[in-house]
Length: 259
Ligand code: FE2
Image 1 (cartoon, helix red, strand yellow):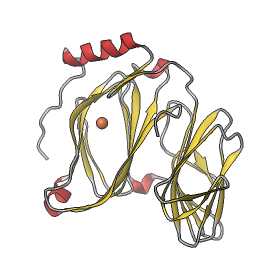
Image 2 (cartoon, protein in one colour):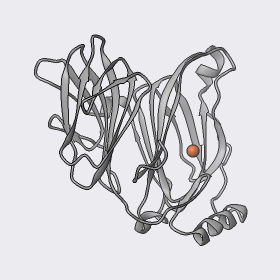
Image 3 (spheres, helix red, strand yellow):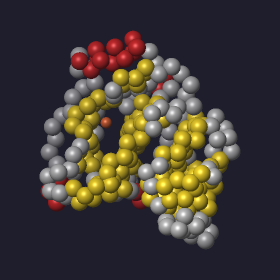
């Protein structure tokens, strides 16, 4: 995925088995002008930032970070997985912010698995974890700056599921387990299906195995994008300003903490 407005990228971490001492992370780095959304399936991360925030992401947890005007943060495997190794699998999505929110105060929504609504169809064959937006009558607890739908859909073999997509949204589906159909076309594990503006909705059908997919849609921001590494702004001047602010230490620093 490379910029399907408002989405900037989707990065899949793993799935992989890591030995003791092998797990990798992202040491101190800045972000400005957009949001990073981390969803862990297996393994765990420890997060620290220049606002003094510190937390852990365990399997099933979501961190929705609105970088806004800027943070420096680190995203590292936690002590247990570094010591013992284990399975790592997760996703990081980058969501663009509209001009009015690019310089907002950074905001975190750390949501543990237990607080994320899961909707199930009457026959139990469709399970939808509602990270953002709405599905099967369930509404997410995460608040987004612009309307976003972020679902983890699990289908039993042969099951069909339809998700309405609001008008004015771009949508995509990332299938990460099993095979079947997305919007009437065959899709298999690892397929990213870009749907753009679908108008009414998207249909998923599982083949003979269970299927897992992320279903995403977001209201189009429709503004100029100037992007350089961890900064996503509207103009080149704003990117230059971000570099200058970063060099001048205006993003702050991460204070060493114990525990
Ligand atoms: Fe980051």
